[in-house]
Length: 246
Image (cartoon, rainbow, N blue to C red):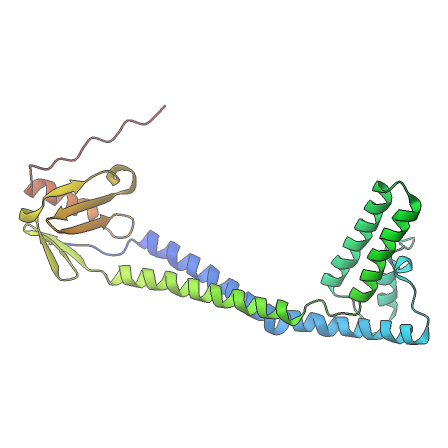
């Protein structure tokens, strides 16, 4: 009696992929529930200070914020460092740096200084408004939860497929193959498809109006079942392995 079992290498790979995807889902949940809200809270302290300066009429224009100090730090960064409890989020710094790069590019590509100043002014005004907004809006938070659901569902599907293949019972004896209690007698075998045997260890057997697929990547001892098949049905032969292409 030949009894197959799950291929351990296949099972470990599937379980590993499912675990990684589930971990990604957990990370998405963390970002949506903790990470992003915390960054919004930290940025709100910075934005509140800007509103205070704006109300006092002492808020510098965005162009001044983007100038670099002698130490290479932007004035907006220096401002935040000097204010206790004020912190610029990394995402907002990315927006600030990106705006700075875009303004520099405008001045490089636009020969008309007046037009360049106007375009730069638009970017600076957009930045000034952006600095008062939270780095992540509710849509972006919800997106993280959407990604998490997708990741968890996909991981569950992988585990489900693995579980189904682990529970698949395949046995074989001199009379034929039994798949989950359903017998496939060698005497009823009508054809064998060897097309994917040599490269994938997959064989398809036809038994009249029924068919049976054995895959050596999913289950062990498929080679033994094939050898038993060839022994009992000598009218079927396995084609030679194609020569490797040079």
